[in-house]
Length: 98
Picture 1 (cartoon, rainbow, N blue to C red):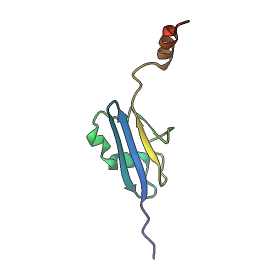
Picture 2: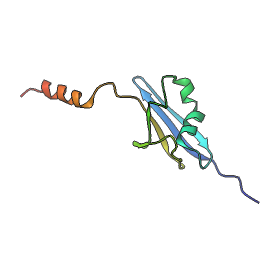
Picture 3: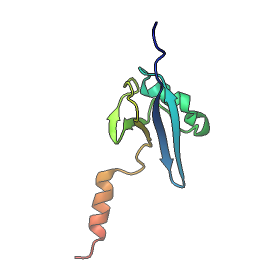
Picture 4: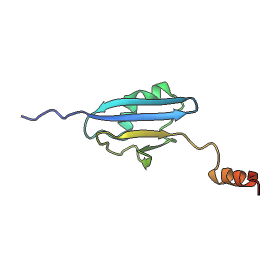
């Protein structure tokens, strides 16, 4: 007789200025990143998240939506950059006193 698969516990997080969301989600083994995000309800609460354009990762490492999760993973949904990093560094360097 087969034993039922034990649920895994993962977290889904998203942050923007003034708001940080962290959701604990129980998923079945073999669940991918996209399914866990959908199950978390975070897309309902933050309609500006577009999984077709936002990058995602696990513990600050970029991953694809098809990545199979492991117990304890923290899924991170990244917002698009609002400033070019090279241009930001250039502006900071220009402001430094010599």
